[in-house]
Amino acid sequence: MLHPPRSFVYLDAVARAGSIRKAAEKLHVASTALNRKILEIEAEIGTPLFERLPRGVRLTAAGEVLLTAVRRTLGDLRSAASQIEQLRGLVRGTVRIGCAESVASDLMPRTIAHYQQAHPGVQFQVVSGVTAQLVQQLMADDVEMVLVHDPQPAESLRVISALDQPLCAMLRPDHPLAGRESLRLADCQEYTVALGDRSFGSRRLLDAVMARSRLQLKVALEASAVQTLKEFTRQTGAISFQFQIGTLREVRTGELVSIPLTDRSLTSSQLVLATREGRMLPIAALSFQEALVNALAALPH
Image (cartoon, rainbow, N blue to C red; front, side, top):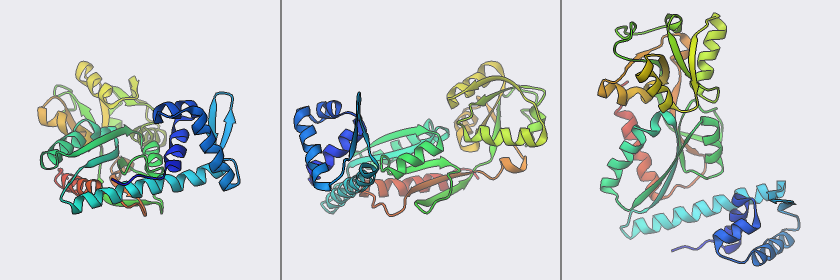
């Protein structure tokens, strides 16, 4: 087992907790000893790493620079330990993933369950949310990979796989539009709809089409969770909108119908699997990454 330098662990814990007292409790050390160690590190560096506030601490600019290097080193140590275990014939560890809500309740748990049948020693931590927040967590090495919709291109983002994802209307099978093979957003104007809130990438796409075409939709519900929108569609028959990958389970069970929208800007989105450029992933993460690429390739296009 590789043990990282204690000073690295202390700095990371204090930064995450935002408080020396809370970090000390988590590390099971005395807060006075932890504070003394932080002061020693600051003296060695020659500049404050934390700004002392009435209710905790906050990283200074120098602290942010150092912590970025610390976290990358901690990640590399975990990766090295994983690879050493792999050489000993063991596949275990924890894979940390950030994913869009559209894959959090179907594709991701299904792929993990299948993977763990062959690798029961691998555990997973899955965080779901909006693309910008998840990419930030990736850059901070809080997660090892992300599966998100339409991330902003960046040199620091290494794209592993990208899958075209049209935006679809989700309807109950008894809805008047349910028999259509495709729809334009204008076709939905005379019916009640449910929309994700403005943190959703799909909502921004829909708002752009509405502004450009001067469309007005009859919005009965705005929600911050995909499952809320789907359930509202099931209960009321209101049309909701979701990227294709987020509709597959309901289509399989026959609960809802998914119809692609053909408005030009609603057909060009992508689901992207990415890691941080330059990050050395642990063996378990690399192995699961391959399984996830295969799962994406097997999806209907």
